[in-house]
Image 1: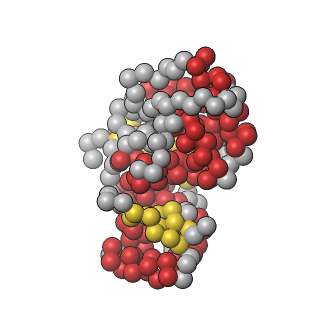
Image 2: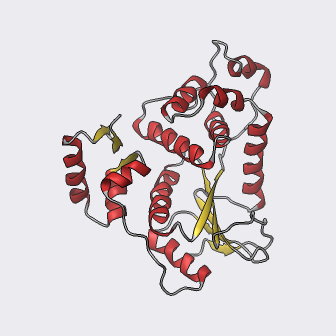
Length: 270
């Protein structure tokens, strides 16, 4: 694990009630960031009583500047639509103004459309549609999209990415409850057990208390869209066993199947 290192000059994380905080650095367009989602979900299911988390958008673009004059009419509700690689990242920060969980739902929905190739998520109009799909307050979302608060939040994420010297996504920085201690930076993507071991070491615990696994119904109530691989990983079962259980629930019309040549997703039936 040569990509795990201590940060020599840590950024002080906010005060937390749980002993560990995770700064999770992702790029919505990075396939490995989608795989990080599976790991984060399983960590939440089994060990979220030990940690809080924060998503930091670390989009790697040649330029993040866009012409505010050109986009102003779009944000104010005009017919004009634009498309730019930075817009999904800005949209995630706009969604975050409605709560951290709202932002996470929005990010997951963006990744879903990227995987299924069902929307051009770089389009402003598509991002508005995704806000509707996530049951966000669309009027508030549209206003926030072009706001100073959203711009500042996005710039803050980019600043944190630079300050923590994140040069690979996904990455996670672990902080413990002692704010004087250095953060532990884990660059890249590792198997699930590595992250559990890091939690054990930071908590100085040989055994962590694991929450019981949810039922399939509870799982899809919490995470509305999941891949077959995610379900198999969470329950530690084979791909075939996971698919068999998912098909049973599809026949019961509890979930529906979405697929293309690259991936199969299962979603709570609307």
